[in-house]
Length: 124
Image (cartoon, rainbow, N blue to C red; front, side, top):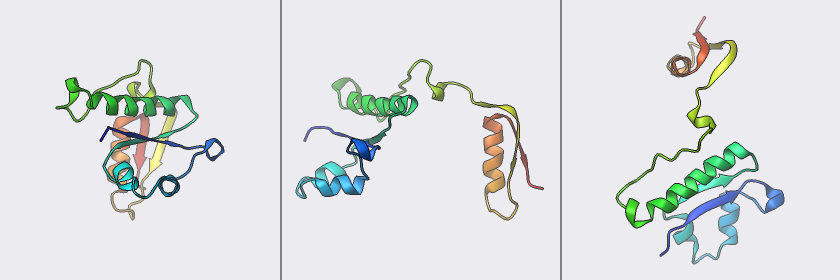
């Protein structure tokens, strides 16, 4: 079979729907090969930053099927100027409250504070 990339349109006005709805529209005999074979999938949004993410997923999936990249499982693709490659910080100091009664909240909040400048954690 040929490699596939499942691209799901997010906007119902443009024919989009949930994967379950799209699967239901597909002939039943083709459903396992298309939806259950572990193909790369992405949701197509109408916002530039999200479209870039989708284009990277599509590009990576197609490149990984080419002879030069067959032995790899991922590629470090980068689009110049993309948000993912830029440091993210808050313009003002932000305090994130982590409830001591929510198991794991403090650990997650501390990890976020470590990765985002201007963010501090409070459990009081």
